[in-house]
Image (cartoon, rainbow, N blue to C red):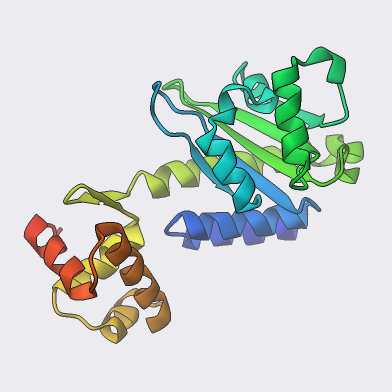
Length: 241
């Protein structure tokens, strides 16, 4: 378990965006014998969209967010009660839950999310986040020895929470469009006349990675070419930031 945590911290330190963070957590979860994970931040104001980083099936997460299931999800509702670490399963405590809440657990189970362990976190500003390690079993084997690994899992959760706040808080808004730190950086260098190869050398990543982030930025701006996205960046006056 020591090696799992060491690798996790190294991956977090090198992460720059949600995709990197997701990959780091997926590796850590697998190291603890959990095939699935989900990090959820509850919206701080009504009408705001929650944030979800996970490797759950996208068909389930899209439905979950669109239907705003977090307002009825018994796992999230339990987490909102305070700092806590708890396990749960679709086949447990059926008689204690309203039908609407039980239906959410049963719907999740159809996508292989049958049980797991959740750690809830609340910061000094009242913001809430929950990290769940999930399995296709209602009571995953690791939970039988939870006392042995609980502290390690809590450290994983807290480290991930801190890095998400730090990395994603750095998202930049350019002409009304939110870019990740890496998308912003690649586009900024492109606006200064650097090629994808030049940018890869400056950032220490592959040319393919640079192209990936530039294409993402282009899609977010809703333009047809990288040059058009660069023009939007240049017009914003942020190329020297």
